[in-house]
Length: 288
Image (cartoon, rainbow, N blue to C red; front, side, top):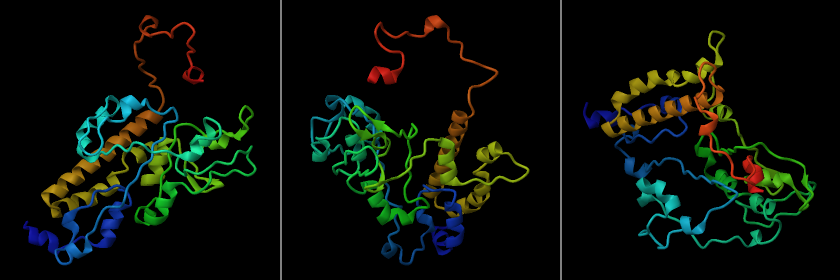
C-alpha cells in the first residue's frame, strides 16, 4: 500500500476518538493526518507534566550535577536516567521563600506546588496560599485529555490536629489544590486509578476480574483494522503502546490479588536481615 493511499483515506474522527477513549496516552500517528494542510494543522500530542513529591528530600551531592547546561554528568542518583540523558535537564538553585517559615513538614508539603505561605490553622481556615501549578496547567490544557489531571498517592489522607506544631494534618496529605482552601483528592488504589483511566464494562456473564484482564480486547479488533492503514513507524508505535498497557494491566492485577495461597517464598528466619540494635523495625518510627 502506497503512502499516497495511506494519507488519502484518513480514519474518521469518530472512529479514532472511540479508540482513544480506552487509550489515554495513545501516541500520535502521523499516518492519520491528510497530506493537504498537514503543515498548517501541525497536530501535536497533549502537553504532559508530572510532579513527584518525596517528603524526605534528596542528598544534593548525589542529585545535583556539578556542571550546568546540557553538557553535564549524571550524578549517582540520576544514573537510571542515562538512556534519556539528552532529554533531561536538571534545574538547581531554585528556592521557595515561603517555605522558610512554619513547621518542618506541613507548611512545606502544602505549598509544594503553590509556592505561597500556608496559613497556620487547626482546620477551620485552611489555606495553601493559592492554586497549585498542576491545577493551573489543567485549566489551560486539561480539555485535551479525558482526565484534566490525575492525582496519585500511596497513603490515605490523615486528618486531625498535630498539637506539637499547631497545624492541621490535612496539609501533610495534599500537594494539589484547586483553590487555597480546596485540596484535590488523591487516589491510592491502583485498580481504581485504572478504572478512571480506561473505564470498565462488566456484563452479567463476565466477572470483574475477567473484565480487567481482557479490557483491551474491546478495542483490539479496531486496532487490527487500523494497523494496516498506518505507516511502518506508526505500526511500531501502536504495537509498543498496546504491549505496555497490557503489561501495566497485568501488574495491577498481580498487585491487588493478595498473597498466593498455594505458594509462599521459601525464606527462612536466618535469611532475613534483622535490624541493628536500637533501630526500630518500623520504618516510620525510624524516620521520626
